[in-house]
Amino acid sequence: MGKSTFLQDFKAFAMKGNVIDMAVGVVIGGAFGKIVSSLVANVIMPPIGLLVGGVNFTDLKWVMKAAEVGADGKEIAPAVSLDYGQFLQATFDFLIIAFAIFLFIRLITKLTTKKAAEAAPAAPPAPPAPTKEEVLLTEIRDLLKEKK
Image (cartoon, rainbow, N blue to C red):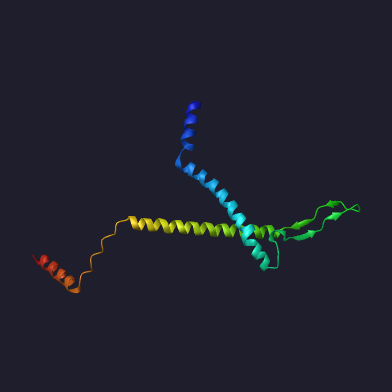
């Protein structure tokens, strides 16, 4: 159980398909997150802000204690504020990202089920149910067999 065995085990683990797939997913997910964040911040939020009176959600805050300013105009103590606009923006980002992922997964599911349906051979139709006459004849036949 030397060093080479440890390195070989690590190499086998790192080169498994799932680990590599996951790494690719993380990198693509990070890039996708940047795209969606830009979509939200630069495309979706400006019209929403315009509809609600030009409000930039990230600037919304509740100042609980104003900043203290000295006689010379320098800030002595910073303001204490509750930045709920940042929370609203993060919530909008999450909802839009979740919706985009939902649409993407739904599209992939439809495509894979459509391909699976096309690739699968058509199942033979189920045999028709026996008629009342056939059921009655089968019962008579079974009774005759029992008598013999």
